[in-house]
Image (cartoon, rainbow, N blue to C red; front, side, top):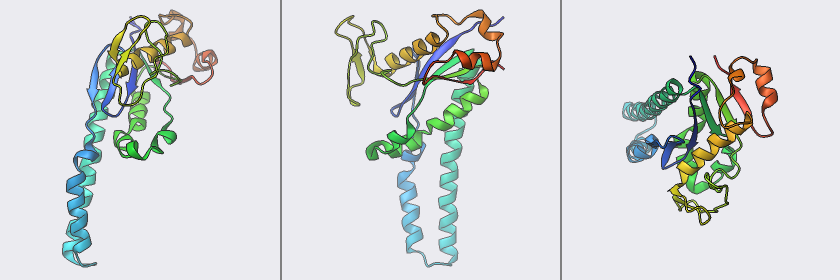
Length: 217
């Protein structure tokens, strides 16, 4: 019997994933942790004579560090995506405007290090159903009353002056993502017939800027 358990996930830099069940996963930022070793090896390469064995050894050392970063990132994302796929029938995520975010020079390295796109690809492959929703106002809107509460990137707590809700901003966003996803299907609980229709029929139900990524396997 399908439990139709659903969850909304908000991804970020400081906290890699915060879900609508209230669980947060810190961002390992594997590249950031290895910047000093990378810089040391790169300086060593620049000082070595081109074509020398010492330079070649330093280059191989640099390659091993990059491989370690990639492997750690893959391992982290595989474990997290598997946990979400195994514990939920439906996962809702927001559509990320990756290009605009990468243009932010101050955050671009951390954004690339987070590799949210790779994480979403893993979710798409593993999840029974992955639904992408619009990211519009997921951070601003109060998840309890809908009141708009603008906040800068440095403000980590959502404080609503209308209903007095005080929660982590990413937690608030994840609840909004879940609510947006559920509204695609016209109600707060996923309908039984969802699991019986074809992928085409599901896609026809989606609204503008919302996209069904993968249906129940």
